[in-house]
Amino acid sequence: MQAFILFIGTMVFVFYLFEQPPVLFQQAELKRIQAAASYAPVASEYERAFQDRRAAALALVEAHNAGDRAGEGRRIAQYRAAQKAVDSAREDAAQLVSAPAARRAFPTPTTFSFPL
Image (cartoon, rainbow, N blue to C red; front, side, top):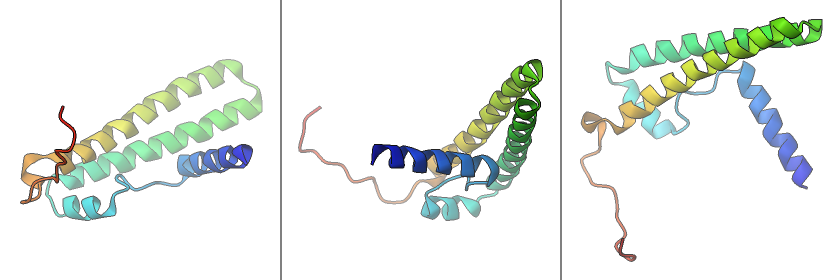
C-alpha cells in the first residue's frame, strides 16, 4: 500500500514537471487576485518560468539518455535555477493573496480555546 501511494506521488510530480499547474491551487483566491492589475505581470512571469523549467527538464532527460555526464551536471544546475524562478513567481502570487488591499473585509476566525 505504501509503495502504491509513493508511486502515485511520483507520478503526480512527473506530471507537473511537464504540464503547467495553476499558480495557486486555491481557486477562490486565484479568482480573487486575477482581477487585480498586479496579477498580470506575476502570471506572465510564472508562465515564462514554467516554460524555462520544462525546457530544462527536457534538456536534462536528453543529456541523461545521451550519457553526457558533464552536460547532465550543467542541465541539473539549469533545472534548479529554473525551479527557483518558478518558486519565486508562485511566492509573488501568494503575496498578492496576503496583501493588505486584497484582504477580506471580515477577520480570520480565531480560536481562543488554548492560551498562547
